[in-house]
Amino acid sequence: MEQQDRLIILVAGMPGSGKSMLSSVAREMGIPVYVMGDVIREEARRRGLEPTPSNLNMVARLLREEYGPAVVAERVAEKLARDTSRVVLVDGVRSLVEIEVFQRLGRVVIVAVHASPRTRFERLRRRGRPGDPVSWEEFRQRDMTELGFSLGSVIALADYMLVNEGTADEFRENARRLLERLIAGRG
Amino acid sequence: MEQQDRLIILVAGMPGSGKSMLSSVAREMGIPVYVMGDVIREEARRRGLEPTPSNLNMVARLLREEYGPAVVAERVAEKLARDTSRVVLVDGVRSLVEIEVFQRLGRVVIVAVHASPRTRFERLRRRGRPGDPVSWEEFRQRDMTELGFSLGSVIALADYMLVNEGTADEFRENARRLLERLIAGRG
Image (tube, rainbow over all chains, first blue to last red):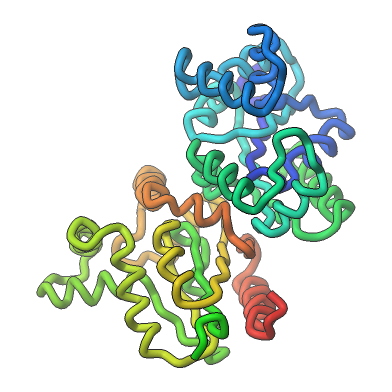
């Protein structure tokens, strides 16, 4: 496949903004989804570590120290090389160096998902995944960690901004419409 | 006036996103608008410098070196102290330390204005203010300078995201509706 024929949809958003909802809409539409965090989980398994939040944080830090700031994107890129789909989606891009990795593999479109801190905090509390914050202080701390990877710059430079302040159905509908537009090449 | 009675609407956005359109809607609604960049222009005048883009950049850098990273917000804060309006808007907030300055003066709401790089580039080219980029490379360079002040983090943490990809009238209407909601305390 020619590089310029491939569309790589990069999704960025703060914790609780709704990235995984967008990914699930993409999967329903038959778009292969690569989750950046899965690279960390695989590496933890390889090192024989339980996927607890603190272990995953440690593995993410070690990986970057050993292989550089773009390591997670590079590992996803290896997977993309074995995928012949014309359109793929990568969930959880965090930095400009990661974006550069994907730009070498195809035409990149950045989609940011945004919700206010208040909305995201309430969602994460309801979700209650292991590692999700239970207090506002913990939530702010996690936001700051995410922003340390220059996630804010990725969001600021997004080609599309999906605002997720309404119902899940509204968001899924907006997500589907955007993905259809991108697939049709009207993006 | 009690601090908690004052609403300070902080506006952040990349160059060409439409911040000044939001400010002009606010002025029409009778909301006093303070433009962060005016502090730099005043300081340039005080130092006897023409307000050319390179002089303004230099003055901004010198000011921060001399008085710290929050100096522009602190100077706007001095003006706010002489303003008794219940609602004010500050245009052009760039960093989290600036936000902290305003949080000491009232209830802060962050509004981000977003447009895609492509849309912003086209707008800035049409606008053609002195200092506006003429090439894509210059535009990207200016974006990177702005993001260096952690503007991306402010955008990522916005309480409200106004997307400005449609017509000017649509944007003005959305801006007016949001400001009305904030003024009415339904923010």
